[in-house]
Length: 338
Image 1 (cartoon, rainbow, N blue to C red):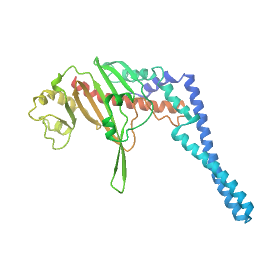
Image 2 (cartoon, rainbow, N blue to C red):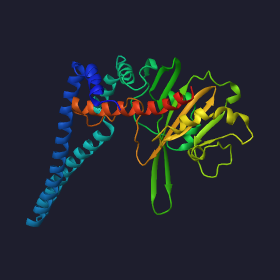
Image 3 (cartoon, helix red, strand yellow):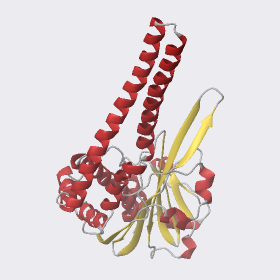
Image 4 (tube, rainbow, N blue to C red):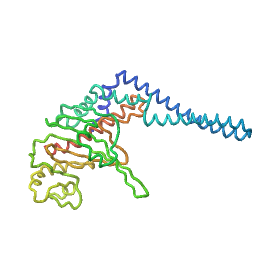
């Protein structure tokens, strides 16, 4: 596990002395204070208007005075309500002058900063001697999701890849690509309760020069009960993994060699593993389902409410560490086979 201090130092080297970034955070801090004042004033006006109308109504029954009081009270209440709505919209949509929050992302992904940061964390990882030529590809800093699984499955590979950030690098001198997809949403209801899940797919592609075309479409996936396909001599392996080849398919034994079985069995604590496959390239997929979006695309953090460099560094450090773990989790399978 990489030490937090290493990641913190890498982030500091890119952002700490950046005056443009520093000034932006000062502006955002003032805007957050201004937004809070809008909320406080809005609530006070709303309560004050209600109180004014109630107290005046109790003290007088004069029709003219009552009408004027109602107009003034509703005017105060209306202004208060509008200010509260402006506060709410600014939190969720960052419109108008609150667009300064989005500028954090613009500066974060500027001038190949993220390439240098991913170089730094990978060169300090357990695979530092096997990785080189790292390049971060910036496509988007927004956080979004597919409305359902069908829409995700019907989206082309290039559209998926190009809608999120990628990292490309050489691993053991072979081309590699890794990215975190936008999740897809699943809504399930039994008539009484409704459950919303978000499923995130993590993908790594590795140039295959070990297996010829006859191995295309081989898939090793997370084990299921009562699998009728090819079974190895290892019962533990058969419970942990399945292969999509029939018992009489000679490719199964040729691919799942005793050495590979031992290496795959040595991989621990990888509950999110979904499958590995060969189709020209070698492909590793991890999959995670949760009631909230647990992972954003590579390098992307939640930018709302960041009002200090300390908070920015904390979120980015956590994200870089998480991204590193996801990349390493995929490379473990590559190393087992190649």
